[in-house]
Length: 194
Image 1 (cartoon, rainbow, N blue to C red):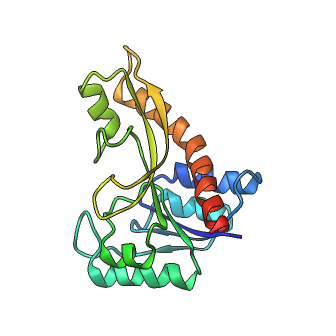
Image 2: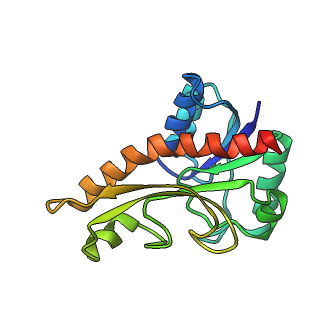
């Protein structure tokens, strides 16, 4: 059974979708640990609801990344849980050299756009501002650049003429919750075959 660690900073809706897919037998994996850099993040409550070990990781002084000593702690926490694949589910910090070295091509992220279009925060708002007809969801491997790395799967989402940022984001999230478990099963299949 492939062991995964989920990192998140927020509501945890993708974490819930992954845990439910495992519970339903659609995704063959075990979540070894859920870790958040936000003490009261709902993602930790979701982990508890599913009976998954979870932990708060105090992030340190930087706003968009972890301090080096904290990133070293994160690596140790994941390695102690025997994590093979790290899954980012709304983790709002950029991972640096220590994590990338410890889990080469073993960190997966989901982004609410058709990368390489609209990297960064609130991509659905960027798509609306650009008057796009389509946007979507990308699951990709994490590398040293933000919202970059080899694409594992993508799915289009239409932008409706009456869309608000909220309505478009809600439709994108519906697609995320289906695509992320499917894309992870592809990653796990490659790992099992290796």
